[in-house]
Length: 169
Image (cartoon, rainbow, N blue to C red; front, side):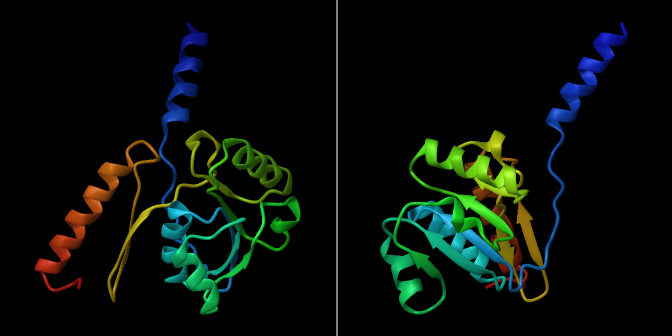
């Protein structure tokens, strides 16, 4: 009987949602491994919060390349290397290779750096929320990696509601 209770406790613990923490990211350095559309979405959001973004990718999508040219981000035009983790506070593994993303996860684990792995939610130390910003508020929305489409829909509804009330442009 005791054993069953413990198993239920462990199962409930595994299903517990992540804590929605808001962190001052001003001047924090974040490594984004990958140069595609997922990386682009993450970078756009982080720049709104004053994050210093470093990108490691053999190729950058046109928008990221423009951000590099304009000095908004720093980029190294090569595949991820373990040394890229030096001095970063967080990492976003968003390459098109599951193996590389898993290597990044392992390297971050060894160094105690929180990591988000775009193609494997079980390896994420944190989830990247969908964000709505107004002059007065920041709203972060997450489904815990379960249903990004639903999260996006909820974000649109929040933006629409705030817009109707004149709180969001």
